[in-house]
Every structure is written in structure tokens, then in C-alpha cells.
Length: 285
Ligand SMILES: NC(=O)c1ccc[n+]([C@@H]2O[C@H](COP(=O)([O-])OP(=O)(O)OC[C@H]3O[C@@H](n4cnc5c(N)ncnc54)[C@H](O)[C@@H]3O)[C@@H](O)[C@H]2O)c1
Image (cartoon, rainbow, N blue to C red; front, top):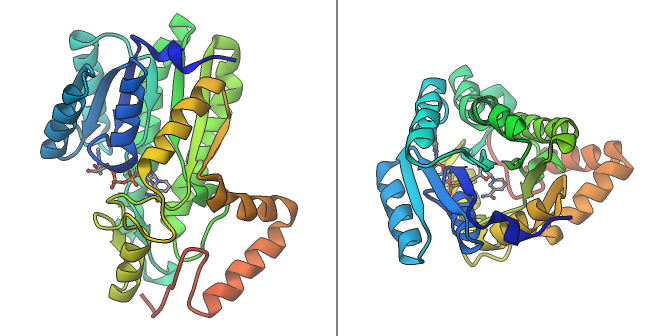
């Protein structure tokens, strides 16, 4: 089965570790004795992450990287090899939030979301997984989303990337199991992080509603520490898909699996009335 004590002394690389789920993953792997390598596009968040983890007695390295740019991830690999050592736990986590109606999304926004949310994960997998296969050991935790299990309308680019990441994780699960490498897709529900504040939600009213829903202490959201605890335990246990918190996803996931048509027709009816499964989607934006 495996245990979280297996993470002691292992090197965990987490992208987007400067905030939200990535920061909590960094702390949680660190609490289990891992050496943390955290990256973020914002230098200030990298510095703060390192300071926070060091203050907890965790060995932490931090690098400023744009994960949407392959050359920067190649450079990161060379730097980690020279300064830290082989990566044992790979967490493609960095991602941006996006919402908008299909007819209102400019091409550049599709590209922005896909370049980070999907290509960013692929770059990490193609650059770090072969060395794990060579060593016949490791763990891969790919941050997908509840959006890949029960998608909402009004989020096409985001949903596309999260379905793709679930597909990537499940394919790797099958390919790498016999190589001694555990792979999980992390599927969080509604988590209070900076994803809406730093993302791009079309329509002022929609953005405002989303901010309220995804804020700390809101009725709908849970803190990212819950996700990190479930993620680290689920990865150690070899779960292919980690749904967290379960209460956000159980009903939608069950409905989607028992009658996809029923689930999609409910989504369509909600959308006609200016809503989706998360909240209001008003206006033409
Ligand atoms: N918050 C949620 O409700 C939720 C739900 C499901 C899945 N997720 C996924 O969790 C992951 C983490 O999101 P979060 O909610 O913690 O958001 P967040 O905005 O709090 O954290 C994301 C971090 O990624 C960094 N980042 C942004 N662009 C980057 C780039 N090009 N290169 C490197 N770093 C970059 C940001 O600076 C930020 O620190 C994302 O993949 C997101 O899609 C979030």
C-alpha cells in the first residue's frame, strides 16, 4: 500500500507553490519529512514560501519559473539536479482560473489557459518522469480539478485543461504502476485560494460572485490545507483519483457516472437561467 513516512528525505517539486493549494502541498510534504522545491512565477511568493517553510523547520528551495515556457522548465531541471538532486515527488500544480461564455472568449485567452494549465503539466512530466522510470521509483501528483469530474458550463478553456490533466494522470497511472511509480490526479472542489483574484472571469458581476464563493470562510469553500492533507495521504495510498473535499464532488460525480445526459441537461437548464453548478453566470460576457 505505502505510507506517508515513505516521503521522508525525498525531494518534492511543486509548481505554483507560492499560494493556495501549492503552498499547502509544500508544507504538507515538508511535515512528512520531504525536502521541498517550490516554484512560482512571482519572486515575492517564492521568497515568502521559503521563509514560511524554513520557519517550520522544513528544508526548502525556491525558484522563480514561468511554467508555461518549456525552456524555463528545462533550466529548472538543470538547476535542481545541480543544487538539490533527483526529484522523487513531482507535482504539476500551477494553474490559472478562467470563466466566460464560449462566444466571448478571445483566442489569446484559450492560449493563456492551455499554455500553463496543460502544457505546463506536460513539460514537467516529459522533463522529470523519465529519470523516475530509470530509477524505478517516484510519485506524480497532477492537480486536475473537480471540473474534470463534474464540469460547469461557462468554463470551456479551464474544463478542457482539467479533463486533459485527468487523462494524463490516468494514462501515467497505468503506464508507471509496474515501474514502481505511483500516480494520482488531484481533483479539488471549491477551495479558498487566489485563483479567482489572479484569474480572468468575464463580467464584473460574475467575477464578484466568484470572489465571494472562493473566499476564505465562505459557506461553499474549504481551505487549501484540507486538499493538501487528502492529497498527500491519497498519493501515498496509491489512489488514482483524489476527490477533495468529497462533499463537494460526490453527488455530481455519481450523477455524471450514472447518467451523463441527466447531469448535462441539468447544467444546460441552469445555464439558461444564468447559473452553473458553482454560481451565477450572468450577462453576455
Ligand atoms: N481553488 C480551487 O477551487 C481549485 C479547484 C480545483 C483545482 N484547482 C487547481 O489547483 C491549482 C492551484 O490553484 P490554486 O487554487 O492554489 O490557485 P492560486 O492562484 O492560489 O495559486 C496558483 C499559483 O500559481 C502561480 N502561477 C501562476 N501562473 C504561473 C506560471 N505561469 N508559472 C508558475 N507559477 C504560476 C501563481 O503565482 C500562484 O502562486 C491549479 O491548477 C488550479 O486549477 C483549484
